[in-house]
Image (cartoon, rainbow over all chains, first blue to last red):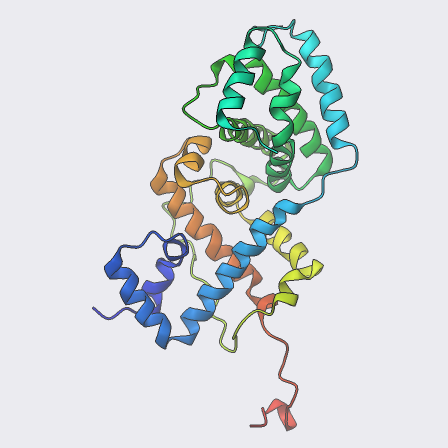
Length: 87
Length: 209
C-alpha cells in the first residue's frame, strides 16, 4: 500500500508518541524520507510540542505560594482538623 | 522536590490521623502544577490563583477519598481540571464556548497547515518571547475539550491513562482529541513558523539561484 500525505497526517500524533506498530511506522518513515511537505509538518508539530512543554517554566505571580499557604492554614483550622469530614 | 510515593503515602496517613499541618508539606511540590493547569485553561491570573487555593482546600477536604492506585499529583490535577471547567462554565459568555460541545461527530478540519518553503525552525525563533505569546494565544483559542487534553498530555506530560482518568473519558478519546488539538495548533502557528525570507531576491521577488 502506498501512503498518501493525508494518511501520514492522520498518524502524526501517534508517530510523535511512539505508538505506531512496526509496519505502519516503516511505511511512514519511508514516506517522510521522500516528502518534504510531510517532514515539515512533522517537525513543526514536534517543535510546537517542545515549546508547549517549555511553558511549564511559566513564572508564578509574586507571593502566590505565601497567599496559598496562608489560605490553607485558615481552611485547615476551619475544617476542624478532620480531613474528609465536612466543616 | 517532589516526595517519593512512599513518603507521600506516609504523609497522607499522618495527615488523616490528625497531623493536619503536614498538608502544607504534601502539596508544596505541586502548587505550581495546579496553578499552571488552571491558568492554561482560563488565561486569567486572578482566577487561576483563586482556583488553585480552592483546589488545595478541596483536596484537603476529600483527602480520605484519595486512593493510592493513582499518583497523588494526578489526583490533584483531576481536581484542578474540574475547578477549571467549573470556572470556564461560569465565565462563559459566548455560546459556542460550550464545554459539552460534541465535535467528535463533526467533520471538522483537523488537517495540518502545509509549509512549502520550510526547512527547520531555528531555535532562536522558538526561544523568542513573541513565539511563546503566540503559542499561549493559540492554545487559548482551542475549544476547551481539546485544550484540556493538550494541557494534560503535552504541558503536564501525564500519560494517556492518567489523562483519561483525570478527564473522565476513555483513552481512545484522549488520542483523538490530542491529535486534533495538535493539528489545530500546528495550523494556527504555521504562519509564524516560516523561516525569514531569503536574503537574495531578484526583481519581483524572484529568488536568485
